[in-house]
Length: 321
Image 1: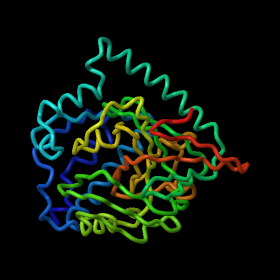
Image 2 (image 1 turned 120 degrees about the vertical axis):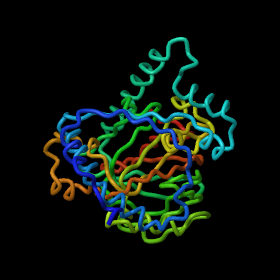
Image 3 (image 1 turned 90 degrees about the vertical axis):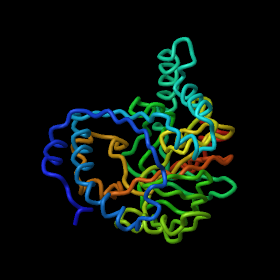
Image 4 (image 1 turned 135 degrees about the vertical axis):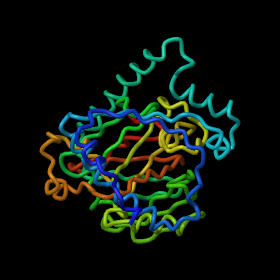
């Protein structure tokens, strides 16, 4: 069908592409709200072959990319901000109001590098995430590393990992709304058992969420867990754009959990040798979906080490480094 059609030359282009610059400037955020989510999922699955090609090229060091979102009237409207307020958030988020933005970013990179080194030096059995509406265990798994704040996304303040999906247990709640594939959802609550989402709830858009998470076998599994330190991020308003919202700082920082595809660059080894079979053995998830769901509540994250010790790694919106 047309939904699954790939134009001639698309695969060949992906196989030869050395780099991409993505500029996002949506004129509508709810234009697909009347479309059957199954059709949206079918189109995403058809495009997955292109993403897989680019991911493999990136793993081999043959492809690079960067992403930036431009302000639009539609995003400002959906965020309940004036265009001036919306642009001001972006200027602050990118440190463009500083005399030397590059110097500010280099300072953040240095601090983030220290945090990642500290996190990756722990021998963790699992992480326990607790907030008013979250009680969740995340298992990092073998040969994993925390990464982030690399310059791929502008701005980006998240430090994240793609955990072993099989070890996710408990309840996750996204208090921040989300625009996804031309649809709006709010108050998503996911119940995990043995790594799988077994129950789904949402204040708005529940039917859409359920169909998105039925897209393929991996759509009900964890692909990413991320933490943002409020000392880095100056974003303090909902922006109706995941690039900004997954980097929310505010009063309590944020965590986000992504259902769907894992990131192979969180593998602590030679990613060019990370075959499909090795990914399966290590619990890296595979899916056409990757959906970041953000929680901005006050929370604590405790690392339970394999030697039995408990270390609070994140509290009051800050890494406890």
